[in-house]
Image (cartoon, rainbow, N blue to C red; front, side, top):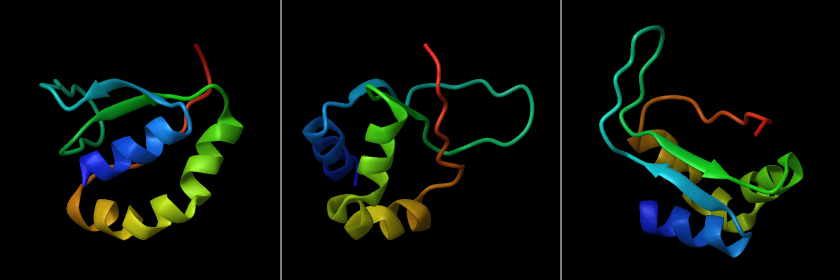
Length: 75
């Protein structure tokens, strides 16, 4: 699944900052896999989320991982 997501992210010039790794949660919800991707702007994130390529694999992501998909605008 991750290789497919990586191909889509990279096709719209997103950059992976974190792919998995050991995470220590201190409060609230946890996820089984943590990924942080930087996009140039929020519009690009929405391009990613609404792309046909992502729609084809989104049910697999939702069905095989726990945790939310969040969009955070910032530095």
